[in-house]
Image 1 (cartoon, rainbow, N blue to C red):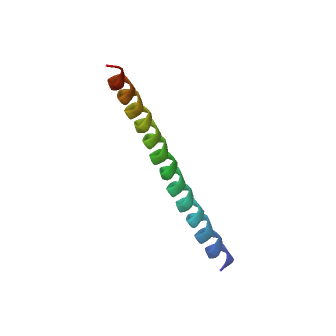
Image 2: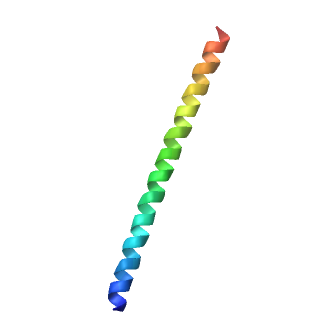
Image 3: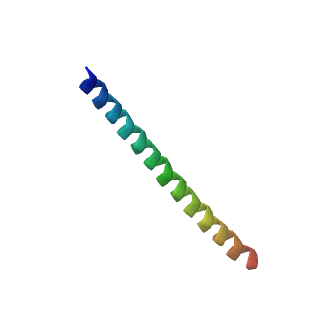
Length: 47
């Protein structure tokens, strides 16, 4: 039984890590898009 619970806990941890990794990737992409949009707006404002 302990082996089964250990495996369940490991699978749960891996699932959490995958979600957190995905969240970090989404945040990074959002930051990059915001930076791109800000540069575009700054360029447009100078014209």
